[in-house]
Amino acid sequence: MNPAEFVRALRAAAPYVHAHVDRVFVLAFGGEICAREDFEHFLYDIALLHSLGVKLVLVHGARPQIEQRLLRQGIASRHQGSLRITDADTLQCVLDAAGSLRMAIEAKLSTSLASTPMGGARIKVVGGNWIVAKPVGVRNGVDHQHTGEVRRVDAESIRQVLDQGRIALISNTGYSPTGEIFNLRYEDIATAVAMELAADKLVFLVNSNPDDWKLAADTGDAGQLSLGEATRLFENAAHLAESDRAHLAAALAAGRGGVKRTHLVGAAEEGALLRELYTRDGVGLMVYTDAHYEAVREASIEDVGGILALIKPLEDAGVLVPRSREQLELEIGQFDVMVRDGLVIACCALFPFPAKSMGEFSCVAVHADYRGEGRAEALLKRAEDTARQQGLKQIFALTTTTEHWFLEHGFVEGRIEDLPVQKQRIYNYRRNSIVLVKTL
Image 1 (cartoon, rainbow, N blue to C red):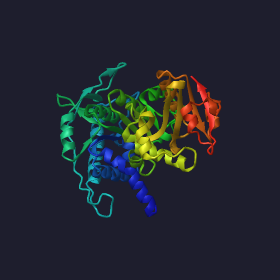
Image 2: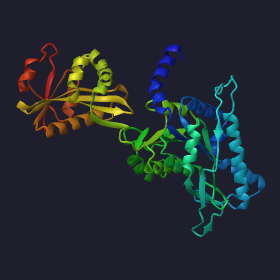
Image 3: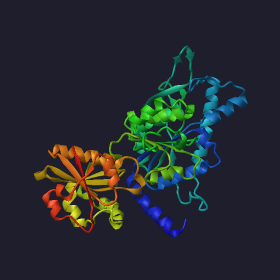
Image 4: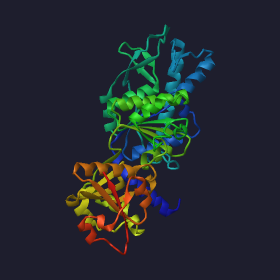
């Protein structure tokens, strides 16, 4: 990366740096991730997140490490569906694997060598008996013994750790009030913790690539799914591997439990976690429940800068008539905007001419990265609804370059004489725009 690219990338990440400070993120990863040769790079990225002011809770699993210990001990690995049946001997392997892995993670996060990305980090990691568990019990006639599920999360104690500027680390075990230890699914722990903390984000680092799951081919945006879309797609995702279905199910459960955004990020791509969290479109799959992630709304004075940035390339190309900031500020009440994660990605205006029962649909612009996905059509529909509410019978548009788009959406070619008198008086004959009219 040359210096100019570095500066552009850093500036582009700045809004997310500001937005993530003091936010609570729960990051969950299985033992498969811990076994990767590049696992320490992921921990380096965790250290960077911590340095950027994110409050972190780490939840890890240990399935392959447990399997290795069972194999060495000659103990059969038994499952019912996705749940391990944990007898007394298996529990010892679970505790050995979870404890060893936990200490390895703590050791890596304690690194502060100047020759590594951890140089000067001085991270403090804290664990605790924060997960109160209960036994799964007998299911379909099978006693799961020491396999448990989350009963309660000591969220207040975790918050105290986070407020002290420390990372909270949670293993795949829980404890009962009677002093028993249970083996838990780390996905369930992470989901429960995120819900109890009202975390801003729940992030699963997965061993596959969510971009290849082909879940959202018909949704228009395969990287971001609303909770409703994700639910429908999950019901038809029998082709997914069991572990991937478990992660997607956890994302749905978290969304229903109040977590606004759950991210599924593939571990294979270098820096995928940072790219997902600090770039607008990321590299993973996100399930969101907040209605304002991408929303269409009336524009406000705060949107003037975003609209100007959006329309300037089209003004420079002669597609749109230039507008000054002062003019836009006066007209802002006539504008609608489509906002994605705080960025204005599309806009339009509707100027009413009540005397002729017409309205002008104008200044239609969509960010270059988001074209071809029906956003201009959505803005047109909203403008038509607004025009009807105002008692208008027709809308018109003036264009020099996009005639076919308007014709495809129900407009017909008109004449200058069809325009309201006020518009006829200021019609620019040098520009020679085509008049298009649509009856509502």
